Amino acid sequence: MRLSEGVEWGLHCAVLVALLPPDRALPAGRLADYHGVPPAYLAKHLQALSRAQILDSVPGPRGGYRLARPATDVTVLDVVEAIDGTEPAFRCTEIRRQGPTRLATREYRVPCSIHVVMASAEDAWRAELRRTSIADLVGMVGASAPPASLAKGLDWFQEVLP
Amino acid sequence: MRLSEGVEWGLHCAVLVALLPPDRALPAGRLADYHGVPPAYLAKHLQALSRAQILDSVPGPRGGYRLARPATDVTVLDVVEAIDGTEPAFRCTEIRRQGPTRLATREYRVPCSIHVVMASAEDAWRAELRRTSIADLVGMVGASAPPASLAKGLDWFQEVLP
DNA sequence: GTCCCTATACTCGGATAGCAAGTGTCCGAGTATAGGCGG
DNA sequence: CCGCCTATACTCGGACACTTGCTATCCGAGTATAGGGAC
Image (cartoon, rainbow over all chains, first blue to last red; front, side, top):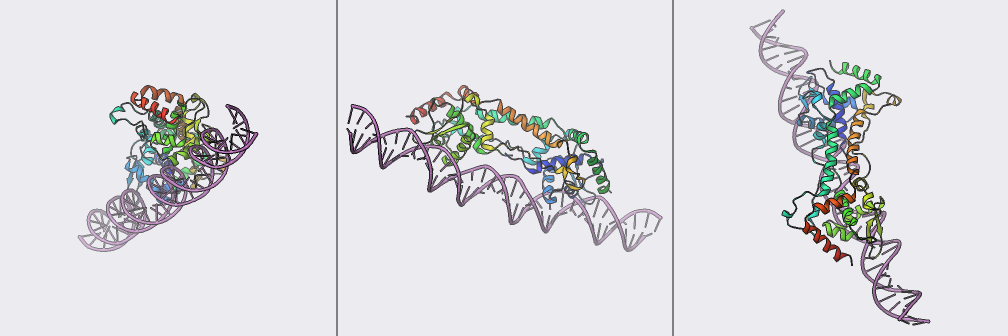
């Protein structure tokens, strides 16, 4: 089971964009510079976040991306599902209905027990991701990141926001 | 994020093998028949379960696979990790250390906040999978499966276990 | 009749192709800006 | 000096190759069994 690398990028970008002054946007190229990742591929994931109404895109000069709603209203799960999709990791193919013990479809009224267990585990995963918002992440980073890193980040903002 | 289809097969096979009389084994071919899946590919996943000490393999005629320990001591998580691997779905690549705000490695003493959140969600997922054993699954299936299906399964056992 | 030996058939195990999805990149459509021109 | 217009440069957005890992398969190594032969 592998989560797309874009999920990590999307979360970091969401945190950075949450720090923008109101009504300012950050281009994909600057976000790629900041994180040291391929610009064109990051752009692809930012488009997914835009489609999911998590980011607003602003075209033209002084354009870029910004949060579409308050950082407190964007959960980590929102970002993960926007990039990775909402399909469950475990997809029950109902193999209990195959083979020599097969019955008529109408006989299977209760869901497959294995499917139930796997689904409840994924629900627990999603619930945990829903507990944390981008605003929470901003707070955690601010409290735990090395002070020198925060200072460098501030300098960088001064430089790229003319 | 996608879980290998083999996980579903492995869980169903574990349940079926748990129903065997003591000291009897079930060949991979019969397991494939029962579930209507490609025999050669199922064999690959059964090998993984064998390597993980979840199943014992018995070579030769009247051989096959059986549980390596009581069904109460095999959790769903054991089976999932044996087939899918133990690597976390989210792999933090530490992109906070890249780009213009990069610092010396020794400055990063606390873990990345995003990494912490993602890891705790996966811990919740694993904890949920650890709560259920193969014996529990056997009980759930026995209580919820259509009676006609259980009867057919019994007939099938009589037929393939000479 | 009993014991031993051998040939058999069946099992697992790892090494080998094929395909889908994630990874990575590019160029075109659209827009706010900045400068120049006319009034 | 002020307003308008145009050309520019910058942005996002979707369409196009490539690589990794899951999917699927086959053939060889090893063993318990069953049958036959000798005693």
